[in-house]
Each structure stands twice: as structure tokens, then as C-alpha cells.
Length: 377
Image (tube, rainbow, N blue to C red):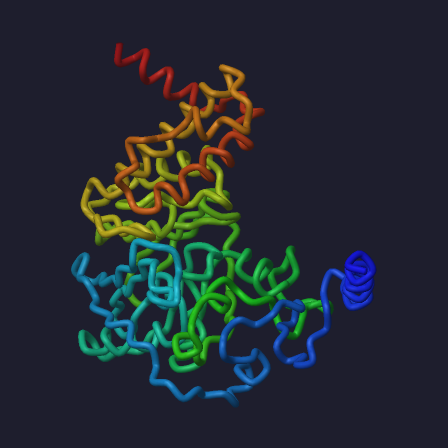
């Protein structure tokens, strides 16, 4: 009798599960709980309402408690938390800067949200009541540019930056960086849109780049001389840094980090080291990293050491025929274990570097380094 009951229960369970067995997803009764990619929305706003400005929310705006730090005579920066984006830091984990022109502010990266940008400008307005007319972006990661639409909507700002922002986030044409016939009406959610509370994201819309450059470009904007330096595939698919020769300031963004371990999930070790050489080829007194608080002449030292050791030790592991499954045991980079995010990010950096360097045959930079060492001897 017990066996018959058990068999009956199994049959009933199988019948009940039939709608799900051959389907990877199910259709919920509340279709608006899915985003445009069919993923469940895990926060308390919905894209269409949010996009049209119909949903304002009931809670007060998130208070980022921002305090600008003066780096040089006309550069001020906001410094983010040394952690990953969370609801608790509302995405405030990247550094962004204001440059004072003759009649306007020039922005280097705009932060994680419309509200962040709005509150940052309110602080800078106390220093100089000028409009923010120009945005220059470092790379495509969304913690650095989701504040764009505050400045474009409220100040009429123009956005310069990598084409990859438009291509990878807005789905624009790879050649032109402009919308094409197949561009989606609603782009996929960004990391910040998935992670943050509604009262931190309120008002944030994806605003891409208006003008691109193919290579390093010298600019004079509102009386400020700038060199916008393309370093290519470094921390992301397309990275740039900004050099102010008259101020002897480098705004490095995520090409340099200090006090924490970088994430090299989208980057290349060789590209990183080449970019650092480009930075040190300039005459600078102050360098603002993408993450971290050190801005003096030692600001890039940790990054240089980290990637030099990473490359050297991974190549040693490859030479010793260490299997990729064990490379993170062989290369530990314990010199950095006291840095933030070491345990979270460094093993992934090692494994990705193994994938990059497995077929590495050396390059001109290595030969130049060897020649310099021989000359010193």
C-alpha cells in the first residue's frame, strides 16, 4: 500500500512539473516584472515607467554626502569607496573630477548615477558658479559615466569618449558608433541598474558619447590645454587617460588604482604595462587613479608593481608547465594581500593573465627593457 501511495505521489509530481521540464524559463503572470532581456527585475522600479519619467518614487534621494578634494589649482575630484558597487554605497566607488575652465566646468567621468552627478555639481557650484559644458570619459565601465545625462539635460554638455560606450551599452553600429536600423529601443540593463536602489538611480538614463577620436588628441577647451591619450585595450576594450600639461596632472581613471587590487576581467596585462609607460612618459606631479586615494608621485607605483609581477610570475608558471587549473595556486601575489579586494579579484586576474600570456612570444617593449638593463650593467 505504501508503495502504491509513493508511486501515485511521484506521478502527480511529474505531471505538475511538466510545464517546466522542457522550458528554460517560464512566463510569469506579471509580465512587467521582466526586463527587456527577459530577466526578473529585482528592484522596485520598472524600466518603461522610469524611462518616461512617470515614476518618481516615494523615498528621498540617496545622499552621497559628497566632498570635493582639491588636487591642483583647477582640478577637484570626488573619491569613491574602495569596494564593489553595492546598494550600501549606491555605486559611489569610482573617482571623478572637475576641471575649472574660464567660463565652465570640464568633467572627467561623471559617476554612477544622475543623482550622484546632480549632488556633485551642487558642491562644485559652491566653488565656482559655472555651467558644466564638457564631459570627457575614460572607458566604458558604467560606474564612470551613468551621470552623463544630468549634465546633458541640465547643462547642455557635450560628451567625448570611447566609441565602445555606444557600441557595447547602447547597441550602436560598431563602425560609426551611431544608432543603426537594428538599434534596440531599450538597451540592456547596466550593472548599476541591477545593483542599486531606486532612490539612487532615479533620473538616470543611458546617455552615450557624442564625439569620438581615433587616436591621441590635443584639445584646448575653455582655456584648458588637454591631451586625451588613447592607450587602447588596457582595463577595458578601449581606455584613455587625460593629461593636463600646464597643470602637470594626469587623470588616469582605471589604468591606475592604488590601495586596492584592480579587476582585469576585461583587460590585458601587456596593454596595462604599456599604458603605464605612456603615463610615465609625461611630466606630472599629481595623478588621480580611477580607484584609490594616493595622488602624489607614488600614485602609480602599486599598479606598476602589481602588473609587472603578474606578468613575470604567470610567464614563469607557463614555462614550468603549470596547468591552468592550478595557476592561481602557483601565482598568489601575496605582496598585495593587505590591499582591498585582493581575495575577491586577484585570482581572477591571474587566471585571465594565463589565458592572455599562454601564447605570448615577447614584444618590442621587452627587448627595450633588456637593452636598458644591459646598458646599466
